[in-house]
Image (cartoon, rainbow, N blue to C red; front, top):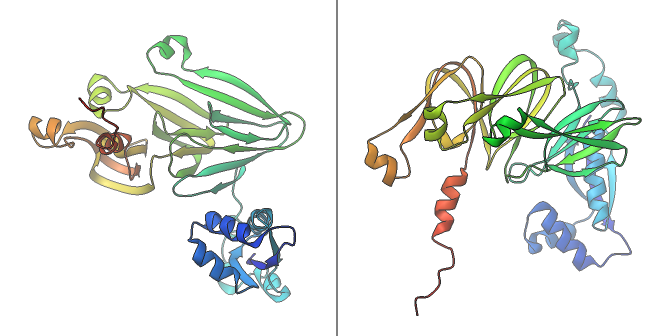
Length: 323
């Protein structure tokens, strides 16, 4: 329901100047704007939230030294929300319940620059997570590391290290921070298959099958990526991340994407790597290799590439003087 988060004042045990600084940092605004906003208390800082998200906003604001109230919707709005209108009365029951997310309960914060995933793991259930991505976790969770793809493939780089986090006796919460600064996407698979760039995988339901798929010399070497893709299939939650922002594209027919910008794509799309322009463009312009998709499906792309960033940062590196 549409809860509001309202700041009613400063907590007595905190210095106001430090609270203003922390508020500016939390909302990524200037200290002057933060001071101006906090001078007009009480102030509704966020609205249209469900109870759980409103509670998290309130907790963060209280942590930096503010008194916060969560304003629930009026009773008449709550009643209206559960009384079907003429429009919704004719809909199937499944559509009336489409606000209920299947699979694990989760939140994604810090988007789109530094997305952070928090997943609730019910008792006796397990979540597969990219190795080294765990940032926080309840002490009730138990971790076990697995090598996906086998040791032979590990020697060629064609493997994934995965950590299984299991809530053995009671439910637990895990916070996941991907290595790359960027956004996170979630897909609930219902028997579909998605191919991921090998560095994009973040976490998944254990019912989702992960396999490495050889791209071949041409597709792998000339794409500038590793020699394999991750094939995710089955039923359950799947999370993957990008370097930079993420854009989901619907493809029908032919579509061309720079190889460094591809994050994921659905099964059924044919793809091939080719150069655009001549060899001079390939080696001197920074462009030249693209992935040509054909068919109908979805492609997820990232708005930045690591290679382009390295090329840009190269000119700012410290250089020793010859003197």
